[in-house]
Amino acid sequence: MENNLSNRINALEESATIAMAQKARELKAQGIDVISLSLGEPDFKTPEHIQKAAKDAIDSGKFFAYPPVPGYPELRKGIADKLKKENNLDCTPDNIVVSNGAKHSIANIFMALINPGDEVIVYAPYWVSYVELIKLAEGVPVVIGGTLEQDFKAPVEELKKAITPKTKAIIFSSPSNPTGSVFTKSELQEIADEVLKHENVYVISDEIYEYINFIGEHVSIGSLPGMFERTIVVNGFSKGYAMTGWRVGYICAPLWMAKACNKMQGQFTSGVNSIAQRAAIEAITGDQKPTRKMAETYKKRRQLVLEGLSEIPGIKANQPGGAFYFFPDISAFFGKSDGETTINDASDLALYILNKAHVSVVTGEAFGAPECIRISYAASDDQLKEALKRLKETLGKLK
Image (cartoon, rainbow, N blue to C red; front, side):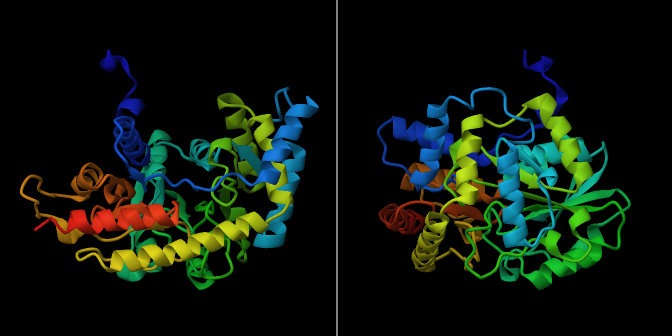
């Protein structure tokens, strides 16, 4: 019966992060103590004032009808006000479309922007869904990358070489999933200078980890001269507000693009869950102290994990500037064996770590960097310490 499936679904890869999380859950169901460092999911609870806003919305009985497709006006205004104040983006609520998470926002963008054969330049290492969503829209991903020594940021020379007459868009995340790298204002200006040389090339800037930034001010490329009309900013509530399950993301885009995504969303999903939107209004307009406190905790955990990884021979890691990931080079283990299992690549190592150390991580192959693995430190200090202990012991058996 699988032969009856469409070519597009047969060509679509399963999300590696979700697949590894499923394997970890299967082991946990067998009673095995698995420490999950695979999903990019905050381990904090959604702040109480945000939960209360959702409860109040339910109790009021006012928000059970279909919400507007692009989001409630109050939420779009709150987002636009935030982007003006914090990101220097000269936008209005009409530039905002609220979707079912940032992933949905990105899918809307590609489906609305890309024609068959259009090229999209993807900065690698990249979030796992970028390439698959480009392919789903019948576009062609063109990958450019930077090394660990370059903080995983592709030099602008690579961008210049990659742009062709078929280039329609460029996509990157800053702070980055999976590397935690953060583009500086001068680095973003270099990208902007090149983009402005090419008519009808647009930047998709994924800023979902904006609030988990350890190097200072977050800069949106859309705030640079001439770039607002050439930039589609993607953001959301999952990471900064610990609202992954609420599924609320958004874009800030030129009016023509916002209208296109609204049109697309109107056919695919309509508006985002009404109660989740009421919670999001409180998140973006209410008390920001819990968000800052979470970021401070992540920064402390980053140091804990950096010190732990530095004590494991064969692992080479840099210090990420944001998000909550390490993306170490583990190629030193390729070809090694514990006498039972031989490690040929990062996927082998990720499975070896899961089965032997009972710690779940994600292969770097899924992110366009087959010499690396991704480790999330969105876990408690005790879990991180135990995971690092297990990693050191287990990897030490590979000779």
